[in-house]
Length: 76
Image (cartoon, rainbow, N blue to C red; front, side, top):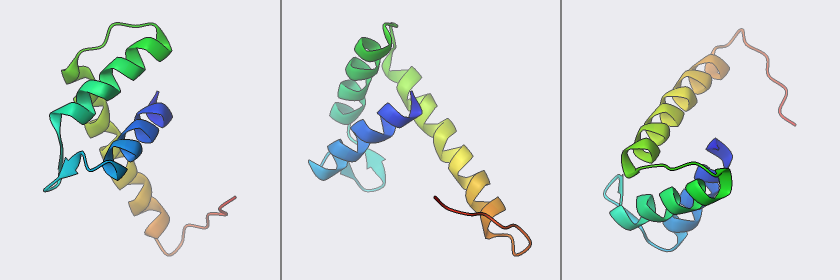
């Protein structure tokens, strides 16, 4: 689900649906529709916003771990 959300939001950013650090409502609405259809679940706008916040938190944690000098990570 995170991968599909990232792909949708990336496409919306290219179309200019992100401004001043926040996503425009249309980007979240389209992401909600696509995720609901793709995974066969009923999602609300708040579900998608919260999922995005969670992904952003995970990204911060992983970035912090990778930036540690004693951590070796082989990128594929």
